[in-house]
Length: 214
Image 1: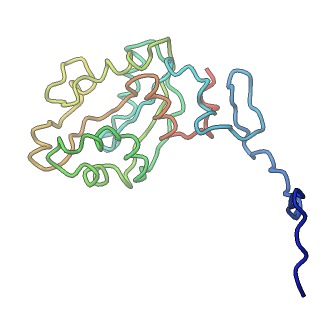
Image 2: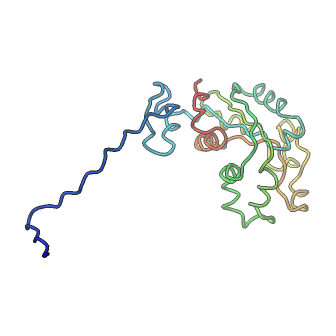
């Protein structure tokens, strides 16, 4: 049977299927503006939950596997709070995953050609499956720099006395290079406000944004 010709100018109308159910609000509402309280909607963009935080008043403290192994977690945190006007909260233990340490040390991966060892392999060996502790420092504007100035040189052998690595560090870059590994230097803190936001997402995740209420 011949097909009936379609009339010119008459648009085709797609058949409608069953209406899709509206998405329910998230079980844990996200806050697009932490100061004005949570809202029960999905964030419009990746990272939106954390964009309104004044990150210049926060720093993420990562107490590395050697710090945990040597039982220095409390000592390091007490020295930080004694030296600068910050409070420490949100302390928790974390078993490091592959993605966390690679996001955290993205700069080492970008500059991997400058190292004598395989950076991805060294990061996995040093961190993945091992326990670290993390904590949040909160204080005045410029907190990331205030806390970071307490650390000392990344090579404990070159860190000045009075700094955390200078007083408590036992490793050296020379020893690490001779053994084909990364140097153990106890503690990392966020470089600046932008790094604090990234570090919080890496180690805490947006679902713990309630910890950021001063």
